[in-house]
Length: 191
Image (cartoon, helix red, strand yellow):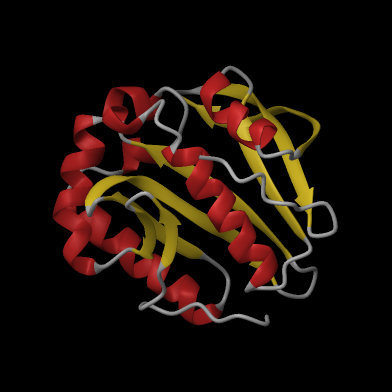
């Protein structure tokens, strides 16, 4: 990889929005935030049900630190004026094939303000420009219109439906896959 993943990494998005790696001292706030948003997060994401304490969040944060050291992932807090607004990450970084996936979630109070679109745009740019990725993928549940709107807004290509590819609340659901290639990426200047 051309760029480097490290704990001091900061990605300035603009208008007070910043992406930074999770820190162990975030564990309690992260747990409280997930708990406050649990119902809406569990509607579309499988991982919140596994988070039952700040200790669970601390274990997750330690895992993201391992990913950074290995160069296989980057888990970041999204902050707006230093308030926790959500999480975003590069997952399944494959330096041989120069590909990665982006996943994200947002606190209810920040929905509809462009925070996630701008954060995803910044992380996509980081993946291409700093990590020399060739392909970035975003997957979202077919029924999750808000989450699916982000890659569409950023010009990602809809590759298709992955039928029954995720178990959510005991049922298999369809996932929509979107991709962007480095040769196609031209940041749209969202505001």
